[in-house]
Image 1 (cartoon, helix red, strand yellow):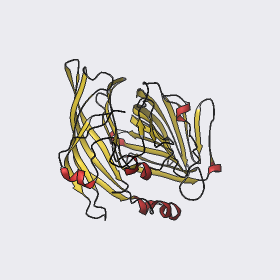
Image 2: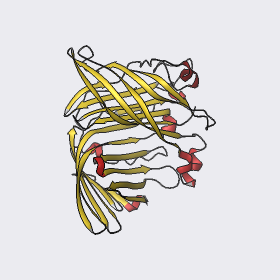
Image 3: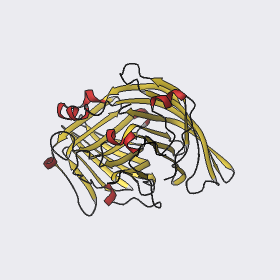
Image 4: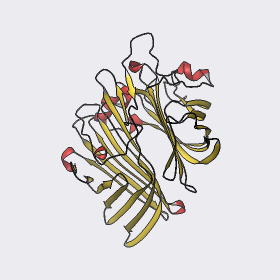
Length: 375
């Protein structure tokens, strides 16, 4: 991977260790990091299946969101983890708001309480919920008491992996793996309170797994997803600020889609903070870029495709100290090595993409999340 240069507007970030000068090695020897190798390729069913890692640091997560406009929204996730007592524990949870009503479910499952298909069609059965299908068409079904729902997620922009989808850490090459579902149509039926309703909207999702706990691979992580439902454009950003054991550099990824087309994919763009918040409530005084600018080129066609833009804070939605949300067993493990705090924002984005001399302007609203694991 090329060295990644991060443009700095505020030197205070560098002093705090949030912004780095890339993946160059520091004076002391650092473990190697290899990211996003190989050629672009289609997402397969096998890449959707749980990997069922054996190490303490293994974790895996499926997350899907849907927006139904004024009628409401859907959030759904499946998380597999080895942290704490027992391996391959799963948390299945979701939240549906529809026409002013709110329905939630959350189930903690041991490894023998959930299952998945090892061949053929992808399917996970997790207590009250199932997730099944193909990368282009996934089906979510869930039960909560007498209520039931079924949602079909069908790809508008094709499911995508940044090249081989993986970042490899250290000489033993422990992996983190990413699949993005940029934009999908969502149609569903909901049986609740004795009546059947139908609903339609747009959605997106991610599937990720890792053999190395996030607090061991990174000091911080950030993710932004912006969507303009009017013309089916999306902006997706994911970054890791690497742990000092891995050189304290930065692994970055940016994807822009319009309809079925990939407009831009970039691994070495510049991100320049323009507005930074210092968390005075935390002993580590974490620094969070709340607004920032973007500048870069497409990885496959750097001369033909360039972009510039900005992400602007609308409001801080919540600050969450993650230790307070963990059960005692997991908190005991994590607190020895990490003090994670997550910050979530509503944001606006504006992006100009120049393709062969013609400029396309993208803008909309999005959700920005940053998590600090340690200084």
